[in-house]
Image 1 (cartoon, one colour):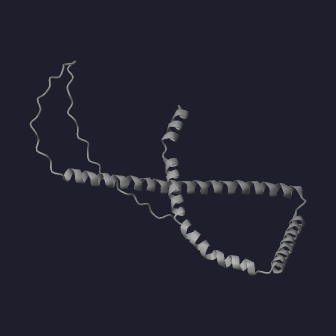
Image 2 (cartoon, one colour):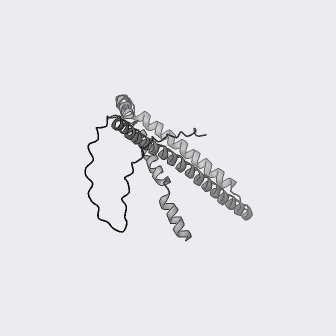
Image 3 (cartoon, one colour):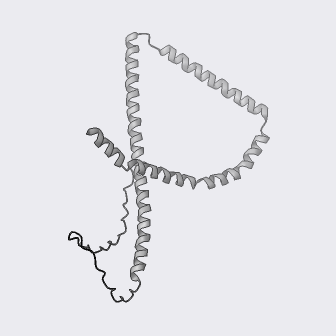
Length: 194
């Protein structure tokens, strides 16, 4: 029965849907920034192209060569430092390996916690987005209902003659119930993230 309960809980949990809605909301927010970035690139492009055209190929080559030599010297120094500091004692080597493994587990746990927090933040944003969507729809429905209720009611006509209902095992016709008016959903505000 535990598997059935787990499945039921998993299938009824709205958090993944809220996460998807939050992701969509973030994507829309980022997409709104694209036109400004394109305009900025369009404005900067002629200056950059002109700078490339005016640069001396030999100066660029010398600069790249100098950077490559500097990087090579740095890498060689680091390798020499690591090899020179490498402890040949097997006990120390084992302790170092164990320490690295424990650090890796700690880092992995930290990343898992961060991923969970990010997932929850995006899901919370999605929940707010969905509530906003629902709230807007509910507001529109309330406005329509207000307009409909405000219209003057027509004078009731004479009641039509009742038709005889065939009797079936003492069945009584239930009076029609009027649907309750929907109230607008209160928008929930969340405290700012710490």
